[in-house]
Length: 122
Image (tube, rainbow, N blue to C red; front, side):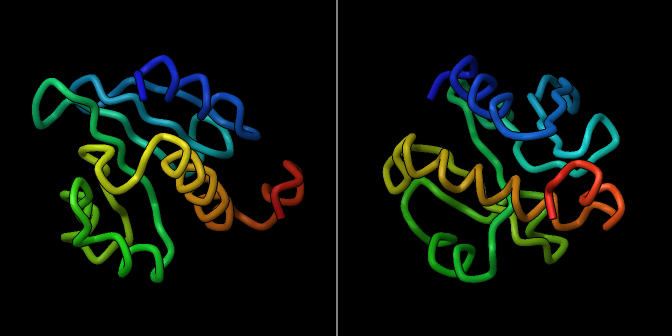
């Protein structure tokens, strides 16, 4: 997946905001600019894009040791359920999009209930 493909896909999800921060990472949030992060694309570990996303406990347990995927640095070391796809060996782009959708849903659940209702994300 190219950076343009990633940004286009994340933009298509409901109530998202985009910011470039953390040394050039493309960060997507649900619930506006001050919302909850659900996806990060970066080149922190070399020339290829790494895609970082929030996961359910089951998905985290199933994927964390698969080729091309690892617990996301910083997030997972703090006990958070975030994965990082480094290569498409295990997750192709279609599967990655499914996990990004789920990450968006999981992040939206962490927004204040009032905001979830206002945005129709409940």
